[in-house]
Length: 402
Image (cartoon, rainbow, N blue to C red; front, side, top):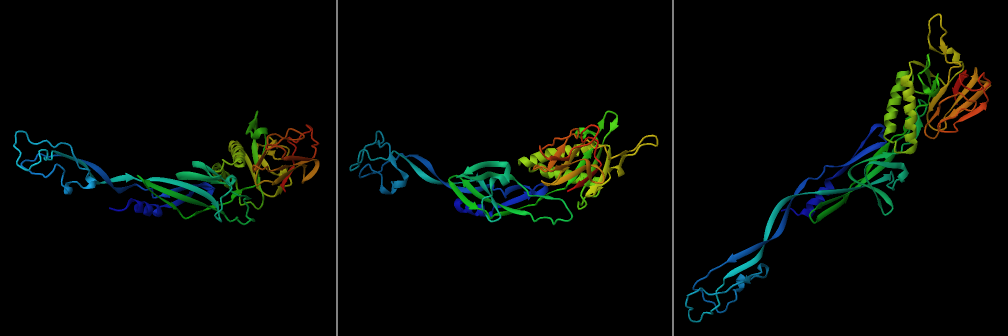
């Protein structure tokens, strides 16, 4: 019968940690395979023996059992030694010399199948095998615990989100190399009072950068609304010339993929906020009936872009003097510059809007001389608006990225 301790040790060394990345690669699922089942275990049990004898015409020199009947491990006990009634004792026979009853314990071999208990503790490390700072990863499946000041995870299956680096989606910038992390699993197998521990080899995890396109979405109405009264709304979408996006359909597909990826890392505060900004952008674009798209670093004459084509008796709607709200996404620090005269002329007013630390900025309404932003303080008024309403609402004539 195989030694259970050796079987457990062999099982522990046969296990492996398997990692499967989720959408975008920042969320990974890790598991131990194959999961152990049952093993054969042999046990030495203590079996009770209770034997009753009746002997006849047997002579004993004394009433003690023979040494061959009394090995130490059997625990023989004489519980009665009464002669047979009515029988004359032969000469030289001890009157109480009959063996009446024998009890004891005997070793017995038992074989059974017993399930193997598996415990797994995971460590999250950088590429050099050092503990990764806990603000760089988060658990969505598994049991976190503190191991003498070091965060660990318990579970045969765990899901870990890694904070990705953020870069602009661009045709001019090389795609950055993925950041290498690694997971190390320590397994412990138990069967009855036997156990075996083994630390599995590190499993590399490659975390690609999150590529965010720089996108300006400018809306005809405040709050990104598709309609105000009887007036249809529109959205003007602009990406820089180095963007790989060249159509509205490409942009919509990219935004949908970006939403899916950001959802996997929303346990990090900045990405949870970004997801809200993305939702506003996608909802605003989806709700709009009319669109204009430009892959340019700037548009010097917004009046050159017609968004709503009307009949011969009704004026067409161009972009100039029609912008009331906007959404801007991209890596932090990106800037878009609005001018109230063209081409790129600040005489009648101009302002800049910067992408915030959550990778987006909303301006829900330009109906102010100092428009508010979300996150706050992302709008800088360089020249106050010289408009009939003394606001920037419906007063934009050109725009460019900076």
